[in-house]
Length: 393
Ligand SMILES: Cc1cc2nc3c(=O)[nH]c(=O)nc-3n(C[C@H](O)[C@H](O)[C@H](O)COP(=O)(O)O)c2cc1C
Image (cartoon, rainbow, N blue to C red; front, top):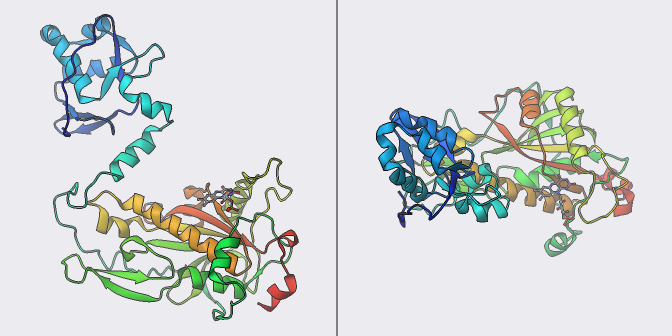
């Protein structure tokens, strides 16, 4: 029960009741737990004879048909059972369109059950109140080290990062940042790619976080921020074309600033590139389909989260996945700004396939799962790209 649980009595006259659209039924050893993110209480159904009522409440159910689903000895308590369902907030009274009264605002706003559950689960005020009362355990350094190295086929050493990007000041970069989805025929160079990765994600330092506490763990400092300095997001690169680097699928070793080749540009990578291209069919700002529709980027950056590293610190708060997504947002902006400063064409993406990433990386999605995609290339001439300058870079 949350606070503010008020007893609701039966509606007057004819009524139809139904489960909230957001209801979830979870099996427990002692019964079925019924809850919704909006409910003020959770109902634990222990008496198996009541299970048929669950089926009834999936669709709008009038008083008579609800009573028929009750065991005979509970018939006289019919009103109390309905009152309990309504008071808990797992069921409500339906309007003529079948929308349950307690769901109305959420349904009008278009909340999906998944989003609402995720939102409510991760936005409870709980700095001091954790779901799991046991103290957080230290991160298993062997299993989830801060620096992540992969078994690779070969290493591609990246050129030294350049420190001479004084042509654009910071505020100019911020002003000029924009999405560009059209690429020049001249591909990016290994030099520019090296700078892009260095100024976005290279590891500056490994630090001990929460040093005074038993859960002390190693964190990282990078140009981009990360909640808890966990930095559990790794960059993978589908290199389609890049002067100075073989096409293929690479992991960015952000400590050694090198690329570890995992495979050639196989079918899963090509499909990821095609999916990326298909996600850019039209910029929301323009009315017609862009002529650059569907261009494969020179490089597709895939962000993959090591969920276990985050969970080892945040399992007790239940915030792991929410914080991973916030870190992804932070990385998107970093990639946008650095790409703009380097004169690259940046484009964040909304769509990606964990399955294709799993096939390309050869890792179980439970260990590392793709959570974001970003495309870069040299901007088409219409965006002021000078190929001569790029080759020099
Ligand atoms: C998280 C995120 C996802 C995006 N997804 C796509 C996408 O799937 N396809 C696309 O063409 N652009 C995508 N974009 C780019 C936006 O469409 C772009 O930022 C928006 O139109 C504003 O334009 P601007 O970046 O030039 O200011 C995405 C941007 C972000 C930050």
